[in-house]
Length: 455
Ligand SMILES: [Zn+2]
Image (cartoon, protein in one colour):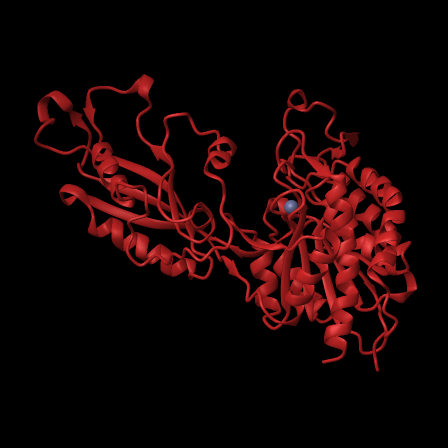
């Protein structure tokens, strides 16, 4: 036997984690007091302070710690060994936060963490300083008896798209490479229902230019015979969806293979839909949000209403946001969009489609021993089975880790619940759920050690 074969009973771990929580929450409050906004217009010494604070907390657990940077914001790498031959687990979270927005929108100051009715309010109290603390809690709970080799990677620029993460992953590849990854920056399905995030949609942004005339002309002189670019653009944009609101671009992947459903009234309320506005698309709502493509016109360059004159506009531009099914290559999705729009050019107009930005989606192979142990650890902690969920947006770092470690089992977990309001005013963490997250990670380390150590 080359791994730690002392099995600690679940109820013992539950008690141990419970007794740690007051200090874990105090430490979380200390981290939340540091306004570590990574956006460049904010004071970047605060991001450095927060990296140092995280490093100090991890060093106090007996971890080997370093603060590292590759031209971007500082990240923290910390390592603590388990028994010889133990499986390696990499735990990710980020210590930077979103800007707080207007103080007036907050009920209590964003960087003065405040407990109210079982929740901890503050910018970063959930996203993602609670992710940092969940990993730390698991390390703390095991003390010198860690069942796995554990490496923490705490990023400092997730909220500004992780630009230097590829360089960091490359430079520290050897020490980061692991059998299992726990990426704690997502959300659970509901209070009381844990979730593994198994799919993320990819993203494409494109700019469409429509030209119909060499120059603008008087609408009274030529309107009715010569087409203007803006009306032509409107007809072209109407080709993006069918009458029901499904995306009408051939060649885009879509799936309805989802195990849970989003309540329609809940979605209407969450999205702030007006009473008469209909839901668009078809199939389960979770498939429309997570597994099927969506297209949104996010901007149009055209004369503003207040300055518009009676003129046929010669050219118009629109920016489109395409969300791509998790497993589709975003470049292939862009190519399909481009072809569809060029083929649909109304009235012989010149249509030009240019790529603005691409981001890969993610689709986990959510099977195998690590996933089985993760689901069991969640069930242990919550006394309720976890569900698989998707996210309609993309998280750049997830696909980077997946590319770097194609053979590792990649678990996207999180501390958030539907009321967390990450990135918004009054962001908060449900403290009861947070304790379950900490327990689940603690249990998971033992389960992975027993499962992979004995295989
Ligand atoms: Zn986050």
